[in-house]
Length: 224
Ligand SMILES: Nc1ncnc2c1ncn2[C@@H]1O[C@H](COP(=O)(O)OP(=O)(O)OP(=O)(O)O)[C@@H](O)[C@H]1O
Image 1 (spheres, rainbow, N blue to C red):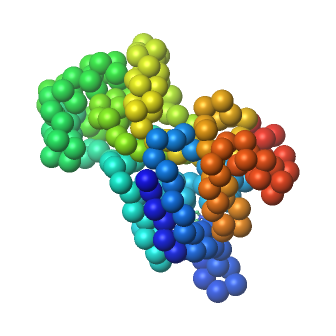
Image 2 (spheres, rainbow, N blue to C red):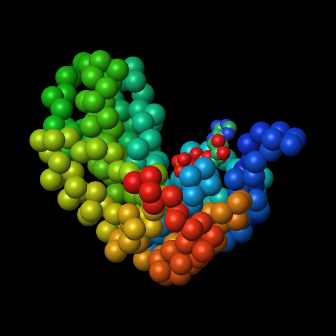
């Protein structure tokens, strides 16, 4: 479960202040695939950062049972001066997994030829993205967060990456932010709606989708 107690997050000051979350208090059950629905600029990315512990709230508490992954597209969790293996070994300290296995899985999933002494920053931007996706998928987390789209999979290992994402997500809780409910319909079985600072949980995806379309007619679907 992820619990939110009196969670506030605002940007700007005075008349320009914008409350993205205005005192959210709710429990998100584990074991569900939860759509986080919100219009353009409603604060979905902000909510994902708070829920995944990338950012603290201004006020209130976010507490989770289980290990949370960083958002799937978050590109900044590696030490750029360290090698892939050194980064993988850090996972051993953080998550109690074998660093060497993490490095092997990362090589297999990324399809990138890993240099023993090559620092992370020595790879091309595309290779770095694939390596980070490989590292992310090398550990089974309890909670995953997707902000809009999954990161692109490497062309040569795409099938294996897709299968791994599916297997990881199947054993976890997932919160998937989108402005277009149709994009996650059939996958999500519950929903959150974020609208004008209010975050509301719905036990079924259909109920969330209905509430969202009442609040945000056309839900920004035309952008997709
Ligand atoms: N670091 C920041 N500093 C100032 N304002 C911010 C910051 N991050 C977000 N905002 C503002 O907070 C509001 C919510 O932004 P956020 O990116 O979380 O919304 P979103 O629902 O994810 O939007 P989109 O659908 O466009 O991705 C917006 O008005 C945005 O301009």
